[in-house]
Length: 366
Image 1 (spheres, helix red, strand yellow):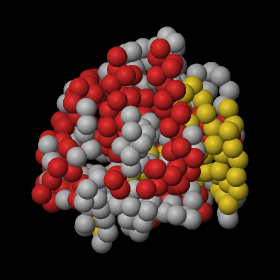
Image 2 (cartoon, helix red, strand yellow):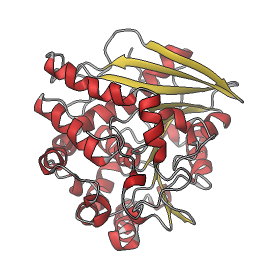
Image 3 (cartoon, one colour):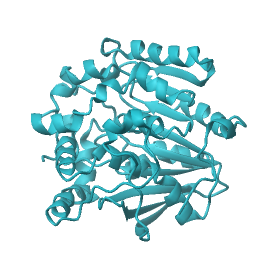
Image 4 (cartoon, helix red, strand yellow):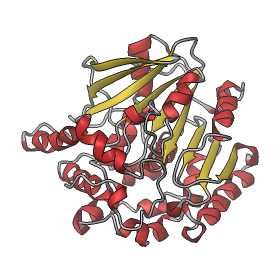
């Protein structure tokens, strides 16, 4: 697995802003994520991976993608505190814990200094890291979203989405895990879903209204997590709205795919069908807001951006919930905006309607 960020791809096909993808090349070795991911292979060789999943139920229509009937549950072991830091208006705690399948999870919990308005599960995209989501010293396409959410009064859980900088490394790790009966997609979604437990153990707060904000690959995970569990949490997807079948055969993705077998194992469960109309049918009436940069080459009109949103919107409209879905095509590239998305998310979390659409509140079982 090579440590290569998107900046090395000829033509910079994703049109990443700011650090142009080089953030991955700096962060992954400096923060130890390259060794962290490679340690999974040692765990596999040592017989420490287990095809065990006893967490929240996964709806039947999504099981082929997750390869399990349930999400992976965090083990009962205590959280391992790796680092604590303070910033202007919030603090960050980096933790590690194990899932029952034997794979460890690392992530950062951002904690506002004042009263908590709610909890946001933040899924970062490929070639970024949780730490960078809380720091704007050298922004990547996440645009320090975690920092802004914390300063607005929300606890933010951002787990590391397992990869070593690019699509090829993600495919290799997913293929290795699959050969031991562990689903990388389930792992990523379960890591994101564990935010309530992490928040409860570190802050003592429970019963918070919960929203989901996924960016790029993290948006893909956010959509699938809500579709799989049916919890109806207000969800923002940033940098994801396209026809997957077109995307997977386009030059945007093919330049990042290096090993065909690993890619096949990763995508064999027909990820392309979990988009558009079929996905909307599983998510509706989950409040959903999409934000896409007008110059985002991975979600361009020719890759079906407008077509897929229209499909999803039609499902919501037919069900009488046209007010629960919206999109913002802003002037930008493959990056977070938040200009309309964050106020939308805050309004949904504070609305009395949250109690009617979200069945997650007060449902934490430690």
